[in-house]
View 1: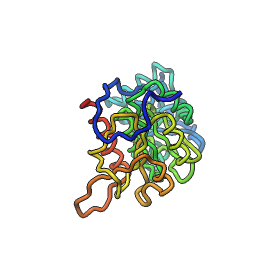
View 2: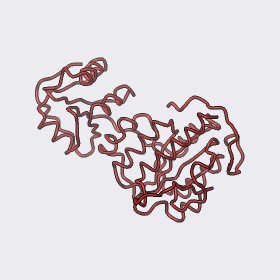
View 3: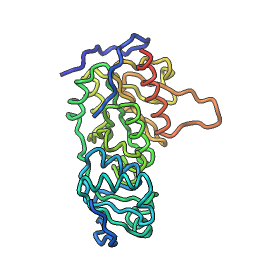
View 4: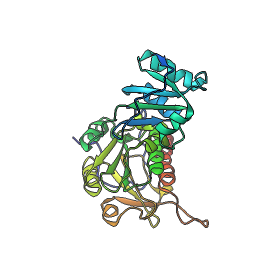
Length: 284
């Protein structure tokens, strides 16, 4: 099933009506002895834990700093955990430091079930319902966890349907990625594919226009019409979009760079492009 559109890359604005953005217990004072092993899924930080609770993620347990139980957001975490019958352990900060592995935990750590990885077929089921407002973020070997988490956060902010990335040479969805996403990993589907270039060809068959971010891009990003079904391809900071992947894109777009800094990091470039897509659609 394909989207209702043509495979001609748009070069001027032709309005599409904007549709709704994507959707998609008890407290123990005993120090927790069940320290997670390497296979456990850990979330750190108040906002990521709170978003995971709101999203209905399956929790095993929550640890909170025994000096911050009455803080507003921590109190909300304890309240939601009580409603869901999740055990909450009050522990010293040193225990949280150990559980968080050096990340800034803000006095809250949780052990949760892993988020299932989406497939390209799962993404297709989402986008066929959206027609013109489709937005996919496709990542070419983003290896930095902070960059990846920030990109997923951007995807959640602009209402992107999914993030698609290759299995190899890409940062895994780790505790650091979830922390950097500020909870967006709970809402944004992330699909792992064996070959990004082939995934682009598949996405194009769905009627989605694919634009690669490139410093030497053919079109200035503000001059490109992004109001049709769109996929943005973002490369790594070091290498950018690889030549084979770039060759599969319908168009390459560039950001103007006039200062002393020669490039932006991947998350910043993604944010600029994604919010331009959103701006154009909201202006329609």
